[in-house]
Image 1 (cartoon, rainbow, N blue to C red):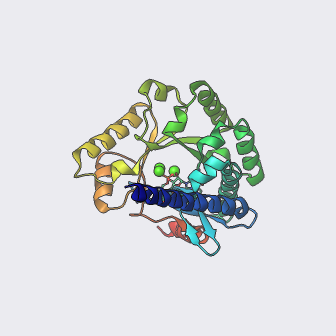
Image 2 (tube, rainbow, N blue to C red):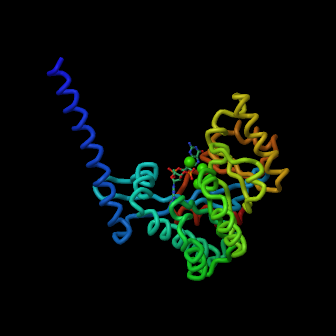
Image 3 (cartoon, rainbow, N blue to C red):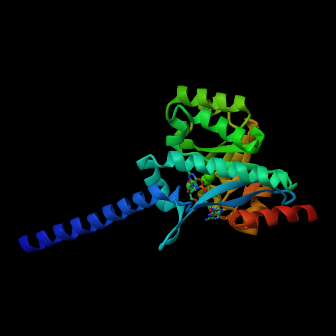
Length: 279
Ligand code: C2E
Ligand code: CA
Ligand code: CA
Ligand code: CA
């Protein structure tokens, strides 16, 4: 028994070391990724459900890690957050997304709103307002073409600070959206006071509609809540015609998901946008 106890322990520490080592290597890789220009943004269209027109895009980061290939954000965003690297990385994302949006505008493509994910750490910093301001100035993008996606949990953190920052961001003219809506616990009284423009229904609720009656009820409730509070509602994770049919019937007006388009590199997105003219 003693013997096996020891080997279990050794096995445990070895796997722990492997995990810790991998994290450390990821963190070190992340540290250099910005200056080595290993990040790339992909863009996923946000579509008007009634006519299929592209009205916006979400910028999603990709890391092309040498000798590893594409690392999905779910594998490195949390490490970037814990190490603080999300701050410079997030700043780069915002800058690049705004620059690209302006470039498409200058090329005469149909104007879109660009949604950028903001992590809690970025939002909590005092310099977030200055960062957004300077990114807009640099790119000469009109503020209403930038949308910041904030998670529900982030918004629940520190009411006074959150409220005051949202107010100042709204005063600058940028759009605000609550990402993964329904997965946190926002009180309706609080939501009413938040100056946001849009609720983004989390894809976990969309996945099994229309046949899952509970999920269907949740999606329906969020759409109605949006209408009552005069907030736009967008459904994410829209993958099938059945999803589209359900959402249209429920009067959800905007959708994003594989049914329409996967996230694509800038060049591909530009081509997709230019075809919008032919519709
Ligand atoms: P998110 O903000 O909820 O982004 C939506 C995710 O769902 C994206 O995954 C997107 O590719 C995926 N998706 C889109 N349509 C569908 C669909 O129809 N079905 C399914 N199953 N998935 C769909 P992705 O690109 O892997 O990003 C994962 C998460 O990583 C994002 O979730 C976001 O939380 C984070 N993330 C990505 N880019 C950034 C960034 O620039 N900054 C920060 N802070 N976080 C980011
Ligand atoms: Ca998002
Ligand atoms: Ca989301
Ligand atoms: Ca998510």
